[in-house]
Image 1 (tube, rainbow, N blue to C red):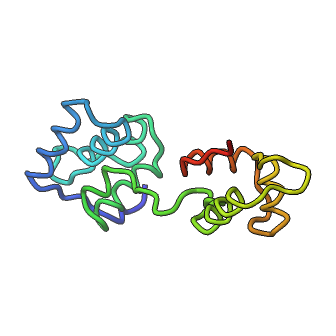
Image 2 (cartoon, rainbow, N blue to C red):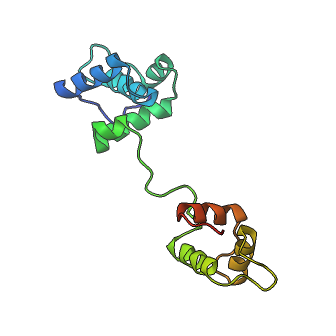
Length: 153
């Protein structure tokens, strides 16, 4: 195996923290795995193991071992142990405050000619017709009304 790019040199406090994570078993499997990897690659340890041996020992990939080491060296212990939180949702929300305001305004207005009151299907069709949104399901309108604590009756 080639020369290792990063060396992990854990302090006594970090070793104690990692050991506690492993021994208590109350952390996520991801966190325990990363803690085990960090202990295994620590240069203060008695024997040095290759990345492939560590990966085999903990039933993970060599890439995972390398990423844990790199994140510890570049960003610190907390980043190496915990998953990164998402800053944005995977799919942006279609419904925003402006759209909700349009739906409320429609609910409060007179229903179309020939109808006694608004239905969620009528509201969804009218929102698309008035180009408040490209496309919207009647269920989205229903959830929006429920969220706003509004009723069509």
